[in-house]
Length: 393
Ligand SMILES: Cc1ncc(COP(=O)(O)O)c(C=O)c1O
Image (cartoon, rainbow, N blue to C red; front, side, top):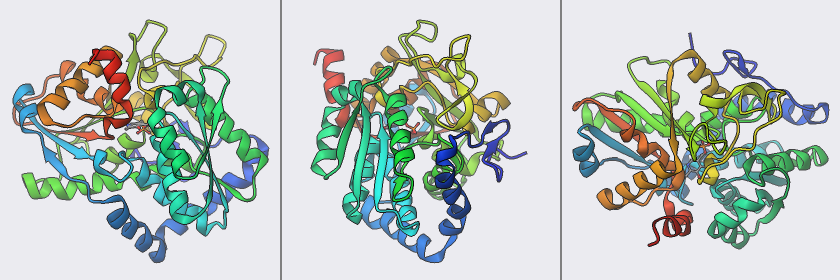
């Protein structure tokens, strides 16, 4: 039994490539080449060098003393917030821009919710001198203004998605439409472990550097590569996939995923996909999806733009239905309070997405000697205005 993707991109019953015929050549080109390219020594060398000297890897694994005292367990933070551009997203965009170059692509498109993936994409396009267009929902453009400014400063064009809930799902729809119209010269850098095969597997492999580092860093600090639990927030699921990757098939390590319950799982304003989702197809992948009785996608809601998505990657749908992963839903209010606690106990202001992961301690008790690694996926600079408005600071 493995929790990794099979050759066709399936995790159990989830995954695959459900795409319009016009996209077939694009995804097929990628599918036929991605593993071969990722295994080329020159690719590995360039990828590792950029992760080290440009992104600033390895990111620290930090023992959070005061948080550990408060919650009476051993808490380590994997500091993806210290990556260049402020979140884990750049691990994937570095990998994909190198992939795009090897496939001879001259134009990049991306979707973004919180703007972190958009910034990470605009960054690597500037680095490589490649044209970049980022699609972003109109609502997200308003609530993540600092990241919109950063993308523009980096030379990217930000296009507003005006349909549906005007958030991440709608930005993704626009990006897919663009790709259909520009199939030859354009590579679509998807920002999470979602989309048609091979994206979920490819993005998980690029993000797997997170758990690779956790293993050696924990070995050094605790004499074991295995924590008792790895905890991460899940939007599409890429930071979680990276943090779990090398532990997926190791049952000694518990996997905990935290989703956004918005104003409450059953409030009608939520993005708690595992709790509310049914099997369906979104953005080319068979997965769990929030939908109406007749299969129309339900508009999601979360205070955090990066978790405001009605689906989840196929790896996570499989982790949930197989019982390998423990899934917990956290409301806006719980996440905001948890973000404040981490800020004031550890001097680290987390992205609101990540604050959801920290709310785990209000839902679940751990033993005193448990080693709990929280993947600190991003920093909260982009969210300051939301925190200020919420806490009336
Ligand atoms: C800091 C941060 N964490 C988490 C996420 C959620 O994405 P994923 O589930 O792919 O890690 C985002 C998305 O924008 C983000 O910016």
